Amino acid sequence: MSTTILTTQDLSRAFGGVLAVNLVNLEVRDKMVQSVIGPNGAGKTTLINVITGRLAASGGKVLYLEKDITSRAVHHRVKMGISRTFQITSIFMGLSVWENVRIAVQSHLGGSLRILSARPSLGSVNDKTEAILKRVGLYKLAERPANLLAHGDQRVLEVAISLASDPKVLFLDEPAAGMSPAETDQVSELIADLGTEMAVVLVEHDMEVVMKISHHIIVLHQGGVIARGTPREIASNQEVKDAYLGGDDWAPLSNV
Amino acid sequence: MSNMEQAAPRSLIFERLGGGKAMWITTAVMVVILAVLPFILPNRFYIRLVNEIMIYGLLAMSLDVLLGYTGLLSFMHNAYLGLGAYATGLFMIHIWPESIWVAMLVGTVFTMAVALPVGWVQVRTGGLAFALLTLAFGMMFYTVAWKWYDLTGGDDGLMGLPQPDITLFGLKLASSGNSTAIYLFTLAILLICFVFTWRVIHSPLGAVLEAIRENEERASFVGINVRRYKLIGWMLACGLAGTAGSIYILYRGYTGPGVMGAFEGAGVLMMVLLGGMGTLWGPFIGAALFIVLKDQLSSWTQDWEIFIGAIVILLVLFLPKGVAGVPALFNRQSGGED
Ligand SMILES: Nc1ncnc2c1ncn2[C@@H]1O[C@H](COP(=O)(O)OP(=O)(O)OP(=O)(O)O)[C@@H](O)[C@H]1O
Ligand SMILES: [Mg+2]
Image (cartoon, rainbow over all chains, first blue to last red):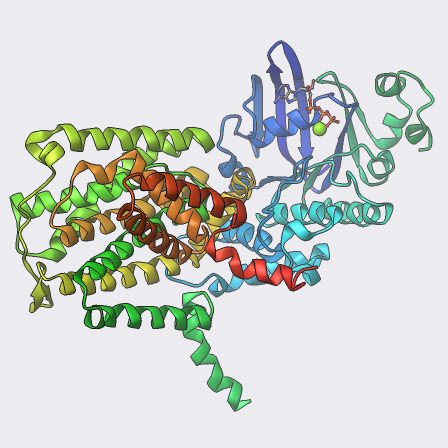
């Protein structure tokens, strides 16, 4: 078993009276793709939001490398190695593809206070930006403004941005949403590859992708964990099938 | 091969400054024109008008650092011009009348010292709340300048400003009472401030500000301490506004609370929007447009605000990106875009 990077202890988040995340205990391990699945409104995005600091927890703890980070500022968590993408694409729309990644790399490597230098003078920042863009296959589009990219490329650009901080754990909220089958194949290959280098936590509705690249799956339902296990175990779990579609005739799971 | 090696250092100066060759040549030409203007324009009145345009252009440019680059709306940026003006004036009247440089430094530093706690509070909010706080603080400063009669002279304003010589490295250049001297002095300070701000905006720091403008949440999720960098942008903008205020009182020999009013603040915002935000040079065009229009209209009618309002409405409707957006408009019409 690989080392544990991040754990949550009875993590909860309420909205008014609704418990969107209810006493969730997670263990995120290094060099693995771990998926969080569940029906709409199960609390998957809220769980990521609380772990990454976008939302405050209502109860419980987030431990990262054994440190309690439950109430750390977002930028501190990023600097420590926690990175994410959003369900609704969040990139710097008015900036070029290059600048989108470059600014993220600059923030990680430093140099932001060098007010008398030119931006391109940060050599190591340029090199890393180039390497990341080449890795995700967007280098050819480096000059293009992000708002003119196709939807799928914008999703990939956000993954590229989130890689700039050399994350130890990467949360991906439905990265393949709205992608064509070909794009989905490419991005799931990229995610599987990232899972050999860091801890990846994937939220995804495309069960083919989930079943193919996950090492471990957690099933959320109404804010709580109802099952966890290998893809094979989850696929044959009756409670999961009931929660998901209220029946056992759910094609994506029965295919596995 | 050797050709390229020779070419590299020449283009380097432009690269280091950021911005293209054309932009810097235009700047140089503008500076030369502005510098010879007092010697070819016989009418003192127009010299003073251009002087005022330069000062308000500097103020509008400093607001552009917030509005166009950091994405923060400040309704009463003129309050910081006022702080710089009063601080410079009070320092010269009560403490040390000898040096225009020390007085300017005092004006700028005082403005930044006030701006720091204000900014510290403001960056803890975002969007509309930030804008509202700029209005609230601005009105407080205005009221202090207006009501603290013993210190500021209240409604009458600050009068009796001494007119020391303008010196450089101990060399006497001219009296600050000479309108041509103060004009050229304004131009010199303006040029320094513009090149400095341009440099900063095109540095890695400027990139951080732009990232915050584009997407604050994403900025914090790439590890940027958003509040800290907003505060840096705020301090830069207020420092420049304070400098503009220092020159303002030297140029007028007087300041009243009127320069710090909300109505004036709206005028500065209009200058930025008219010229085109996010360009740094656009606000100067906006300031020129606004001040010339105001001058022409007010010589013709007392209710010039109505007309300037109407003109601003038309420009916003038809030139949403200001004068700076005109070239892009032509490109689109000639099929320059897909
Ligand atoms: N900011 C919010 N304010 C109030 N309620 C919220 C908020 N965010 C989420 N919720 C509620 O919390 C519950 C969980 O929502 P969440 O977005 O985490 O689900 P999800 O599993 O990501 O769903 P989906 O698959 O549709 O993305 C839902 O009932 C939702 O309405
Ligand atoms: Mg979601």
